[in-house]
Image (cartoon, rainbow, N blue to C red):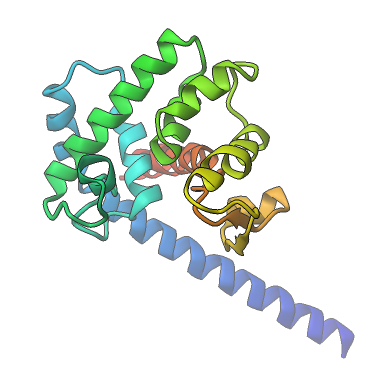
Length: 202
């Protein structure tokens, strides 16, 4: 009886993993349809950003399922969901990331600081430069709690539950209200891996 229960549990886990893998594959396929557009936008800019990184950010932001694929409306207008054209979203997203990468280079910090700053805002780059020069989840969490969240009204370190695989693997499923996503660069890093793997399979 116990063996049957174990087999059933294993079977259910395998089905869940298989279903999740199928979902991820579908999302990545959707994001990869933006490759030509991303390539064209990058050709318009003098930037060290690359196609796969932008695609990984699209996956992280919307999985390609919204018109504002890079969620770049706020950096453009100060309001959310203003951009309704995916090309303009990519243009604005590439512009912000390019500025972050140049700023990160001038401060001599790693490129993942620039990626995290896409979520936090450019001041995070200077913060990292003043705190060791290397982005990390721990440093991003401190910035979220001590700088960003209070600046946007959360002075009591109020949190909310964040259900995400990266957060689960890190052992902390809480984010600070108004504090951005301190897992952002880690998520983009993982999604970059997915983009590269599925690009080889395409």
